[in-house]
Image (tube, rainbow, N blue to C red; front, side, top):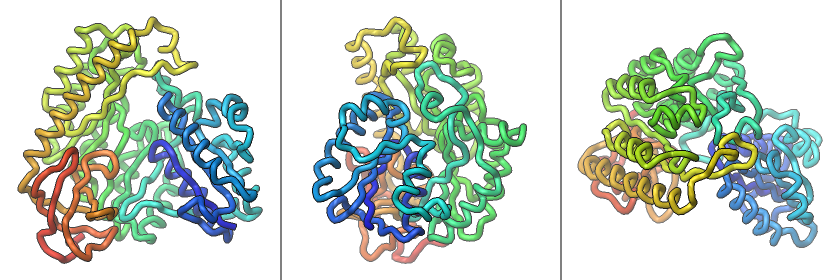
Length: 423
């Protein structure tokens, strides 16, 4: 049997997809990179916001074109948890539907032995995501995650470390730490924050070169974690901390359990770390957001705290508290979104111009027409790519490169030497 899987959505979904593939592969099923020639097609879906659901539906429609000759299509994941009945009615040709909690049933239906294997098949080169928790208990007023994945729960400390060792044995050199609220790790399971201890333990794995921290919450990040980022040479001087807004009234309406003062204190402490890059995301057009509150957000974003900025327009998601509030007109949301995107482009352009001529250790993780890599100050597939001009570079290896220019959102570079950089 050959199985082809398409993974949609966030890196947390990708980890689930890689575990599905690992278990199936270990049980003897052949993993295929193409739907053509495969016996079974799987889509691991996202249903977080309206565009994600649209992408899910487009993928289902596309994959159904490959179900001739008895091929089976299984749909699994977040969109099923959220919209199972609607999707079943719209796509009756799908062979089977599986919620997140039903993944073991999917595996068993394909191979009776698959659930006996706790394996993972990395689909990335050189780096891999390491998930430390599932679910969320913050209950932000606009967010569907608690309804999809349930309350926050940390994974076992030793099991995470064990998975880190296994990934490094497979050639992974960078572990990217993720969870819905990564900096809360351990508080539910051990009664206290355990992220600093976990980072310290993971950094002891022979062969790991970089650890990177994504999805820190300004409410739960603590000074101990920042100190660990500062002192531990294996932790990238980089952090992703979504603020979503800066106006305290809007933050309260969003149920973010933080305010402008707290966010500013955390950012000022972070920026004391030499060379650190900070990424954030914001939401514009939240219900009741005034022109003045939007202007306050834009002014704060230009204040120099952030190296990378992600921008989302507000989406009215059914079942959320915010969906019941008086909504802003769609044209106002669109106007504010375009304004924020323009600001995002300005920040990116200014930062990338300053990087021209600098030299960085870069992990080569892909190749298209040229080699594609990322440095300590960038997260792969999220921030700017570093497009490296060179011959015979090895995927999954580090090289010293010099930034020579920029093209659109990406940086251009060339190797300083042809040798693999020292780890």
